Length: 288
Ligand code: 13P
Figure 1 (cartoon, protein in one colour):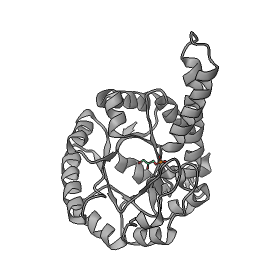
Figure 2 (cartoon, protein in one colour):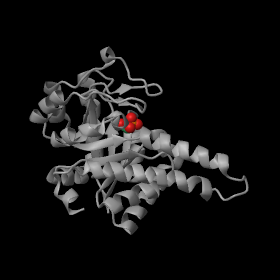
Figure 3 (cartoon, helix red, strand yellow):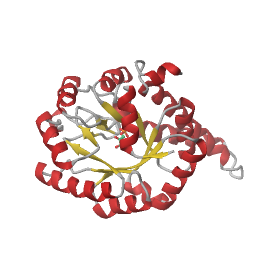
Figure 4 (tube, protein in one colour):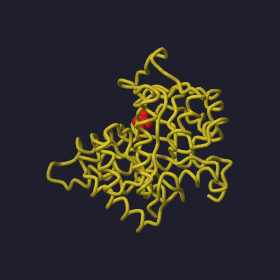
């Protein structure tokens, strides 16, 4: 079924698990991502950047996700990732995205609150969930981690104020992760996560999931991470496998031969991650 971010993170809270939020880059990989969730028996969040949403088309993206969610009978939320442009956020909401992220993390604190609040008002009136962000989630170039000095970690007292003032449904926090980190792994600041979790009562979100060590997942889940973003690992592996296939296949062979192996590589990663996200302590995991 087609769900909101709020609905799927509520399931995660009840079962002490986290929901995988996977970035799709094209329509080819999308069905296998959702089928991976179906095979694991877990909800999934499909997310797109604005650029991917525009490349595919907001309406088409919504139609495809709804269709697969309904026919495969899987709980799927469709989320707009890292949006700063209110017009694009409106376009996503009006087209039927079930959640959006307003990323005001680059703004002064008060401005971040004011702009996030405006998005929440628009979104909630249409039944759409909103994720906000506080602190700086690092970026990487070709897998090389950003300097520690450039990171601004989320301060627990700011998080309390931010959640109270904005009425967001989920909060992305900066605890040492970096976007696009696929050659190395980061050190997540678990003590800081525990401090934030102790004072904030909305679901917490990890960005830059590709660079997080899998052995850290249980601690993250047990301390309130209810949405876990993974993008780069899917992108890198789809591209690797597609390159190999395109390199080996005759030019007049159906494109299926090049694209299906890449889609299946993504499916296997999504299944593997969801298995870990279901957490060994979760009742849902124990049924499997
Ligand atoms: P990675 O691409 O580093 O996995 O991060 C995904 C993400 O956080 C999207 O917002």
